[in-house]
Length: 428
Image 1: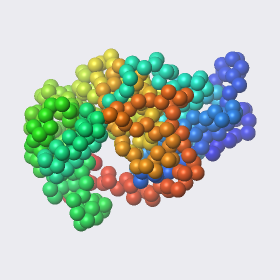
Image 2: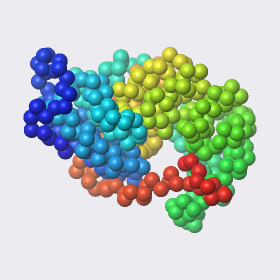
Image 3: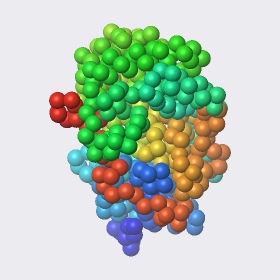
Image 4: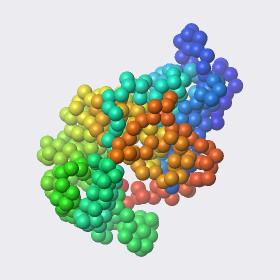
């Protein structure tokens, strides 16, 4: 927790703050680590000199949690003490520039935690739900999608039907590839679980391209057209394989295919979109809104997979959402369980107020998460609805959070380690 003694310690103070006689000031910035779902959540609390007025943000980066916390505690938090929390855009730009070498997911997540906390604080101060600060509602709810996986078309189709019965109109489907480390599917035996944990199961891209489109097409035939099916390739294909996959999967009628290519190969999306009618989604690995801009100019994608914490918070994410609306690209924000309920609620405020919104990934959190984060938004009938209380509506119980310590480094994030059948390193 950073608490300098005097306002004279403020670096590059905003000249208008004293002129307007602002009385509210940031007095403390605290960070908390907890893992009620198993993955590390890094929560940021920005406190003020007004009793009981604080904002909560999420800086969760499951791969580099401790590095993000250091950036917050050692660098960003000391620069916030004594400032007027009202000037969110000014603070965002100042903190972004303070590193000199700008960008990167570590800086993005740290900045995102502070930014969302400041928006939460502002909405609470005004006594309004967060979405009202963004122009108010443009829809009653945000459609959400859930995840199912299985070993064959029959198993997956049964799970899709069950999800549809729970109200979901969008379902992401992942199919196992025998003998291959396939993203989004569970281990089938104890030996498989051990091999997956030690990252000794290889990824077989050729088997994936042969097998998965056939399974997805069969699932579509079994479940009919009343549900939208999505699929995540998780950056594991090269451009040639991606073209082949799209050709094979056209009859599955997918709502979109996510992350066919890694960010390093993003220049190939224009050719993919020109070659296939299958909608394309990408962006969860992007840490700077500038990475989206070349893809939006065409546009070369159909859905932007925005991860609000990693992009630096709501301030840049909302600007990107506005540009997506102008380019006819829909939002499909990233929202697995490693995006905490705080970030999920903040993202929902953006979704509910943006005409560009398409669909929101919705984590199904363990019950312990609901205890640590009172007010966690839970999907009902396949949709998420924002709170009407001031702020984003999610709180944080520090005492309960202490019961759920985070795993050691490399314990959770080992899943990003992967090799091909020839032993070479594969993007995760």
